[in-house]
Image 1: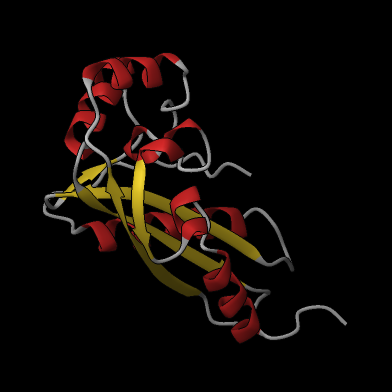
Image 2 (image 1 turned 90 degrees about the vertical axis):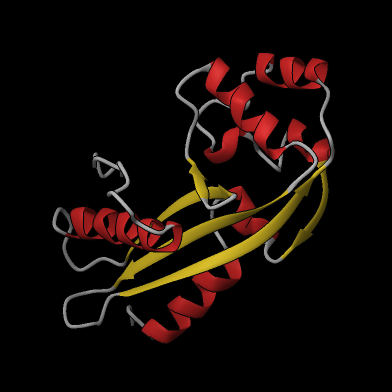
Length: 165
């Protein structure tokens, strides 16, 4: 279910605080619409030089982001918010993965943006798609970079305990 929230970062908001807040707001918004359900929400951002790279506004913005990532290491942060049935405490946790990109030439950036894949992707790339050829190293959870850190979700669900008979 889409939460339909304003995901604009607050002034001076740190990247980890930003993804935590947005994931939690998404979970709260959905939990208010459903009853007796487990609600899981997530939010991902890419961070390079302390700056957050959200989803690109357009193809030119995607090219700008890819130029920033070219030949560099960046962090991918995904916050997961989990809300159980009434009475259970909400949980929010962040997974961080370090990703290194190869140096990209302009022709590669142009080609990749023309595939359409960077649209609607934090940092303007999808590690599970064509951009996999640009990734030279990762340290941390691959599924986090895809957008949902599965091991973290499993750990959070385990902490929630049984929710159905």
